[in-house]
Amino acid sequence: MADRTPGRDRTDRADRGGHPPRRRSSTRPAERTRRAEPTRAAAYHLLRAVEEGAYANLELPKVLRRSHLAGRDAAFTTELAFGTLRHRAFYDAVIAVAADRPITAIDGRVLDVLRLGAHQLLAMRVPDHAAVDQTVGLARAVVSQGAGGFVNAVLRRISEGDRESWLVRVRPPGGVAALALEYSHPEWVVTALRGALVGHGTATAEAVDDQLEALLRADNDPPRVALVARPGLTTVDELIAQGGRPGRWAPTAVLLDSGQPGDLPEVRDGRAAVQDEGSQLVALALAAVPSEATGVTAGRWLDLCAGPGGKAGLLAVLASAAGADLVANEVSEHRADLVRATLAPAIAAAVERGSTIEVRTGDGRDYGAEQPGTYDRVLVDAPCTGLGALRRRPEARWRRQPGDLTALGPLQRDLLRSALDATAPGGVVGYATCSPHLAETSFVVRDVVKRRDDVEILDARPFFTQASNGALIDLGNGPFVQLWPHVHGTDGMFLALLRRR
Image 1 (tube, helix red, strand yellow):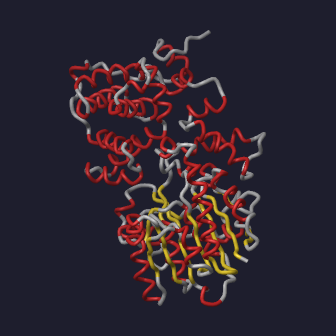
Image 2 (cartoon, rainbow, N blue to C red):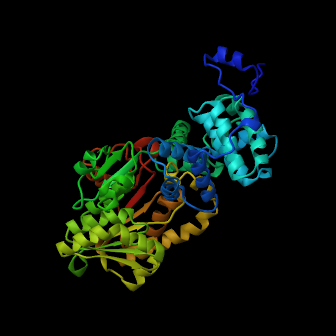
Image 3 (cartoon, helix red, strand yellow):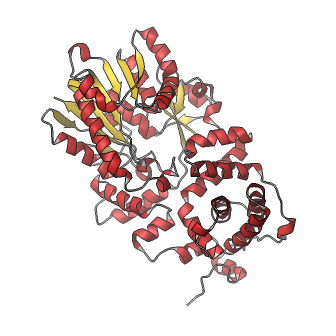
């Protein structure tokens, strides 16, 4: 049987595989750099911030500003940090073998340095000598001189093999465990996604494996930056003139292939924003449903869980254009402040049109009892595990636990019940999550609806088709819509549309 141990005769491996041998560092440890190169230092500080509870996508702009990084340096830092977070489970398995000790026995700061080095060696086009030397310098700068020696030894061991050879060595024999390690997802997440693909009708039980692997692979692909051109405040053409290109599905979407979104004046002014196309389609589809509410409730919209304001920002301009008022509610005062900042341009524009946009702070579970039958259109963008947005929030896969569903399930049901009670007869409720997990999507909706005789489930597919000007495909069997990263290139958004009879 052939010896597949990484490091065995690198020249032979190159000859057999047709790949040139990778260049190893010949610099002695004592001669290596003792400083932290700015891009790698920035990536390290982002990882440490995430370890302390920060969200990577929110922390990244702060880190780049503090480090004065832009252009190619900012792109390198982003790929290094986010790639390391996405593939953490695989790198931890490799590090444990190369260090000959469990990762729990390695200082957390040193472990983050090693993860960054492993990503450079196994997934980036960084020469081995540069990956090792610069990562050793990082360890010496942010931890200690002694840590640099340990990091050097471990990374030299890792550099003796490529990703494929290490995968052969550390991957379990098969099944969920093998997929979980190869694509760096917790096993419970892999199992949940498999069930969601079947439960939403995207795959049959017999053919789910290929779909599952494609989904896991898509979760590890860096997402394209999508902008929303908020109607009435800016146009798609204005953003395209700034270097963007039209989105694939949403007529309000523009894709940005390079540059920082915050550099665009439209984004700085709040006339446009970073927003995934799937999220845009949810707001557009809800706005496309004809309301049958009459009387004083006509023209009153509610975003029950508005923070941090992405969907509310689009709903606000859509409501204003329709001559409707919008209440954007958020339970957290801090997040309500974010909503106010996001909606400021729309609020000013609404005043000129004679409509109002109001941001409130309150518990969404109370609206049904305190304001029954008040609104003709309500969005419940429910708190969820975020398993549909793992491309964008790579740390969520490690931060979330199966037990989170125990707390989220009752909250999601309470919010949906409250939204239905706050909706006038003839009005419509959109229940959305950025998770495809069945326990957060169809199970919640059907559980609430079966206990009421005044609610009708609408087929959401025609409204997504309308929202995308007929472009959106593969919407399943209905009545709910579940978008997928590997099918639609969007976050895994779910939407159910319900009419109050």
